[in-house]
Length: 388
Image (cartoon, rainbow, N blue to C red; front, side):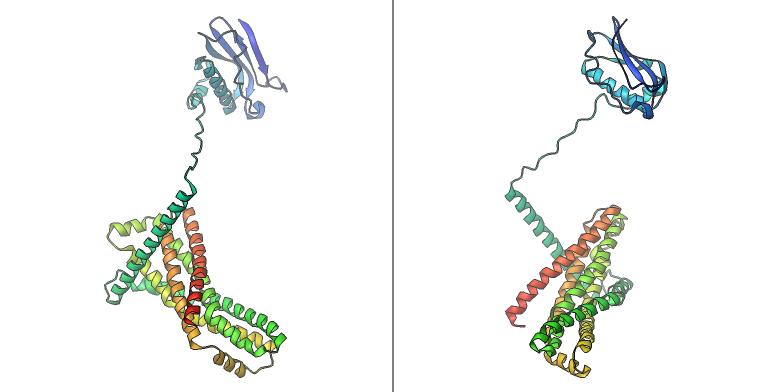
């Protein structure tokens, strides 16, 4: 037997791991020495060309001599796997019988070669094809939302005749959550927004000695735009996200599937009380928020203007027409319907994992806020067209 190749790791002690390759007539012997563990091996691998120095590997068998092997762990298995892969490159069979029984079992769990990495398929669709697909998906979603709205409308009509699957208890609970429970945050936000409007308006109008017109500014802005938008954004983040999270949780717990199997319509049993409660409470919250916003402007104006409280309120009532409140009231109805429908739709199409609940809630809030701004732009165009 002649030694054709030998290699050792850095010799820090007598038990340092090392290996050598010895060649005979019919075999190649890989002799292992020392302790092979994670602390001494340092992740060494058998080189891919480790058998290149052998005179010939044809008709030979690779055996492993472990007589001088001391302690070992999975680091030895990793080394033997690299040996096995290098041997398969030159068609050299490995005789594993000389290995410890536990090492044989662990090595048998590994494949002969690492799995091939499948390249990620490239999307070769053209730009127009992708745009067309997006448009079709958007139109499909619009159709689904319209169908969902029609189902809810039919459920509301049946509820008026006492034939709906909606429970009165669920409706009252949702009304409480969408209305009285939101009064505090609606009050704070609208009060601060009204105060900011009055403060900024007074600073600018004072330059033209027109401070009294701050009553018109705060009143019209609150009744026409600010209160409706801010209240809708609050409800989109607070109630819309809660709707999406609740429905997606029911979807993950297979409660939606159970309702469908038993023949209970999901639109009437779950969606109708949620949507109806928000549609009922949003206009009331808008009116309340408008009053609070105007009061916030009143508080700031009293501290910065020389005007009596009665004079301020009279100027407000004279400067703000009733149609401004009607316009904001109608907008709040549409905002409420959009927020509730979008949140319920997002919850119904969510996944079934715990992470999907948070994703659904976030998506419902984002869609609700963006949709509110878009709807408000549409209403601004309509108001300009009809002269409000």
